[in-house]
Amino acid sequence: MNPRLVFLLITAVSAGFSVSPAVAQQLAPYPAGGPMMMPPPGTCDPYARPNFPVWGAPVPPPLAPIAAPLPLAERFWFRGEYLRWWTKGMEAPPLVTSSPAGTPQNEAGVLGFPDTSVLFGGGELNDDAANGMRFRTGFWMTPHQSLGIEGEYFELFTQEDNFAASSDGSVILARPFFDTNNDRETAQLVAFPGLVAGDIGVTSESDLQSILINARVALNSASTAAYPTLYPPNRVDWIVGYRYLELSDQLSIVEDLESLGPPVGTIASSESFSTSNEFHGVQLGVLHQANMNRLWLESMLRVAIGNNTQNVRVQGTTVITEGGVPETYEGNLLAQRTNIGSRERSELTMIPEVGVTLGLRITERLHATVGYSILYFPNVVRAGEQIDRDVNPNLIPPEVVPFSGALRPEPLFDETDYWAHGLNLGGEFRF
Image 1 (cartoon, rainbow, N blue to C red):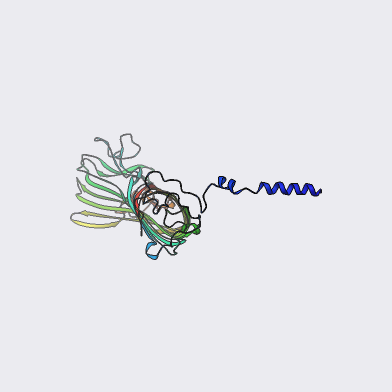
Image 2 (cartoon, helix red, strand yellow):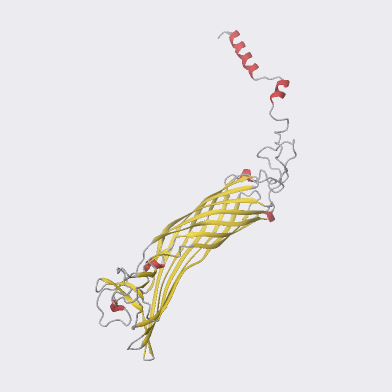
C-alpha cells in the first residue's frame, strides 16, 4: 500500500478522536466528579427520599454504597392485613321444601310438582364475601438483605349459611329425596296438617387457613445495598419454602318431630356431612418489588406442590320416643349405615397464588399497603357435594327387617375446585 495513503488515513482517524480542552468543556454533559442532580420539584420529601443530595452535588456511582449495611436490629419486618375475599361456595342438593296448603300428602314437598318450592339448598352455599386476616413477618439474615427468612399466616373467618323453620302442621315442610325402591321422587314430611308438627334447622360452615415458612434469596443482591440511605432499589427474590393449607366444610341437619295422631310420639334426629382438605407441600415462587420514590409496588407468584389429604365424615342418629320410652338408632335420612363413617385418601396437588401489593411510605419505617390476591385450590372435597339423594326407604330408622333393596345412600368422594380472591388492606413496619 502507498505509505503516503497510510499516513493520511492514520492522521484522519487521530483527528476524529482528539478534542481540544475547550471543546471538551463545551461538550461535557456533567461537571467533574459526576452528574448534577436535577432540582427537586418543590420541597424535598424527607420520608420518601431521606438525605436527599444538596442541589449541585455529584451523585455517587450506581453501585457504590453510601452507608453501612443494615445492623442486626433493623433487619426485621412485619406486615398485617385485613382481607375481604370472595370464594367459591359448595354445591348442595335441595334439602328443605314446602307446598301450598291443600296439597295431597303424596305430593307434599316432592320435587317435580309445579307447586313445590325449595326453601333451602339446590345451589351454592357459603359463597358470600368473607372477612379474614393475614400476618407476615421476616428477618434478613445478611446485612445486605440478600438472604432472609419469613413466615406467613392467614385465615378467612367462618362462612355460614343457615336455615330454620317451624310449623304446627298448618304449613307444609318436607325433606325431598329419590326413592330407589319405587324409582321416583318423594319426601319425608316434617310438618303436615293433622299428621305431624316439627322443627328443622340446617347449618353450613366453611373455613380456610394457611401457614407458610419461606426463605427469600435475592437475585440482585449487589444492588440491595447500593442506596441504603435513599429509597431502596428495585429487587427480585426467589421464594423457597413449605406451605400448609386447609379447607374444611360442615353441613348439619337437625329435626324435632311430634305426631299429631295415634300413635303419639316424638322423633329427634340429626345428621352431618363434614369434609377437610389438608395440603402439605413445597412452595416455590418469585417476588418483585419496584420502588417509585414514596410508593412501591410488589408483585408475587407462588406455586406449592405436594400432598392433599381428603377426608369425608358422615354421621347420623335418630331417637324415637313412644309411650315415654326412647330408642336410639344409627342413621337418619341422607346418612345411613351404608354411608356413615370416615373415609380418607390423598392426591398430588399443585396450588398457585398470585398477589399484587401497592405500598405508601408514611414514614421511613411505617408503610400503608393495599393489594389484591387470588388463590386456586384444585381437587378438593366439599361437604354439600358428598350427599347422595338416592335413598332406600327400608333403611330409614327403624330399618325394615328383613332388609331388601339397594344399599343407598352410598359413600361419595366427589371432587371439585376451589378459589378465593379479594382485596387486602393493611400496613407494614420495618424495624
